[in-house]
Image (cartoon, rainbow, N blue to C red; front, side, top):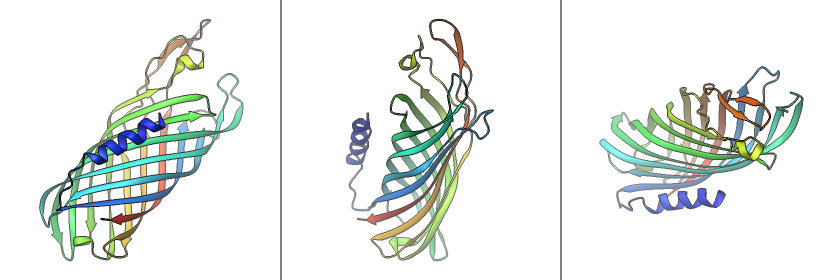
Length: 256
């Protein structure tokens, strides 16, 4: 599955138009990642730890008007997970392995703002990740979402500060918990509830080639609907609790 994630990312990158009037940025990031589930447990189940990511940006050049862009990301991690046994509700500490990829197409409307360029951003993207708990419990998430925001940047990759932020809204969600691998007789799909999430970044471009940026990204999901499955002896109600993901990252980007 990890190879499929990386292959999909490389294929998408290879399909980007190699226009001479487009800027391409490639970089690496280190994130501090958290995932919290809102349950009746105190403290609630919580994942936390560092995550690495590769970023690829493609943006059509232009001083003003409608432009197009692409944002791609591949990420992976092994983080700590403080949770509870399902059978007896006793606390347990384990780990979770992540592998994921995100792809987003963007429309940008560019205008001047003094010495800066101001972009109004609209986008649609897909975020997919596999979450493997304690090396044997697999959950696959697939999220389609919309993005809206603003970005203030230096024109023509000049040195200086830049930043931006906005909102993300998932409009289609899927969680495959692979319940049959855990001893259940059926594997109904979970649908985490849609909720608005925030993102932001602030950076400094050292020169036309090198940029250092700090960023914040998040997902907020409402509780999914209840699904019913069986272990062969009795029925179980299963749901995904209200969940919050946050990532605080620092990335170094190189512009071609």
